[in-house]
Image (tube, rainbow, N blue to C red; front, side):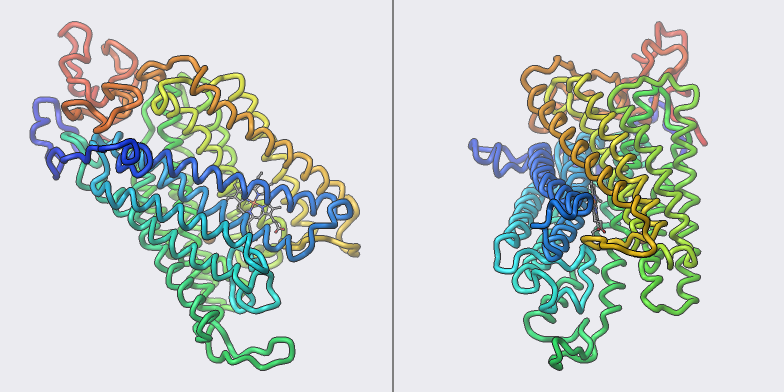
Length: 601
Ligand code: HEM
Ligand SMILES: [Cu+2]
């Protein structure tokens, strides 16, 4: 795409929808509670997601206590362990990370970064949050029904998920399925907003190829989610019918406790296909926003333009598309035809190509950059290292011959925690340290942030590196206790105890972060409108935090991409996206209409 010089800016099509008529809240209740303002909805999403995420964190402690000190914590029974593991996995992946990246960051950043006053369908957007909250409450309710929450594992595979030998097969599994269905309905309402707002409500001059990568990541992830979640939705509905009405979508003829059940003819493997048709893209629903955000964080905090912007955009889109043709790599051990295994192994390994391109481009963005080790930068660097780590073990597991012996060992647990647990969580933190000043007008405390970073980052490695090794030793996944075995050496016990202690420390370190959030809101240093001297539109708002309608009386006009750092001849080392070209240069000698634009690649 050729970048329009400033005198051509009128030719860039303006936002497709004109200035939108905003909903004006009439009472305290419609301003702060049932708000239709995407910024308020974003904060509601974020707090709810973090709150439920804390529950998942505590559950991980319980599991670790049992694994590290099985004798001491004998009150944790096998059933409890399965319930903890299921709720922990599902909450972390869906109710925390998906909700936070899309509902939280998506709502806050999309309208601001594309230069819109709000989401396109604010009322539907508001409903999205309330349905999400309902889904969370239904999920929590399963802790209080007879039999407790489901212990089927986060993959919820039938037939065991709904048979009475599995913990939570009374009410727990139903509440889980209903909660998932609600989550998906709520998400769809928000997701349609995110997509339509990016496509239709960009401000004048904001072409697709001028969007910050954060928006590309969130946008593509939303498209993936809108296509992937329906598979889980129908899976959940069909399993509910199997459980409640005795249909046999997934249930084969089966004998339970010596008794022939009424089921017959269903296919358990069909559920696995539906689940992973959602489940694999889900990894990228979490990863793509993280990719986008990290690109922007390192660009701003290294004062350098993103290297290979167009390639970065295409890599996001291609990874997104490929993520729909790899799902059965989760099913190598399901007895599939070896040719399918071959196909899915090949597509899986191809994903490594665009992913590697992204990593190279991050490194080349940092190369010769003026790297400032701010808190967002620390977390961004932590992400890159961790993601590469997890990606490499993913290459191992993508190969059928390696996966078959390692499947269902702690190696898999270590692998996916690195890629989709630790790595995205580091980005969440980096993003909060980065955008908190815009949301509150104050900076987060730096020493507290550094303590938080180092304990979390080093701690995550101390937890998950040993798990790879335990996997090699053959320690199985989803076992609540290892009694004496001939093939696993004693040393595994010591290692398990060590991992547990570190997990507790890392968990406690998150309290420093939560404290920082609250403390800085009152006591933090005033940030001013643009403390990081960033170029994208959210930093150029008239007020901080941005008011209702985001941009004051007139919408900004965009003249360039979001990565105009260090232009020779410019007044400052950064040029905001909406700065008029006449104001960029010192004096009127330098002609910056070319350089201020994005390089044609
Ligand atoms: C302090 C951080 C964390 C710790 C200590 C931790 C610990 C654990 C443990 C002990 C298990 C059970 C392993 C087994 O017996 O097979 C587990 C499973 C799991 N965790 Fe985490 N976890 C953490 C963070 C996360 C995060 C951030 C995610 C988000 C993606 C996550 C997603 C999962 C999933 C999907 C499972 C698998 C559940 C299943 O097998 O059904 N965890 N975690
Ligand atoms: Cu996968």
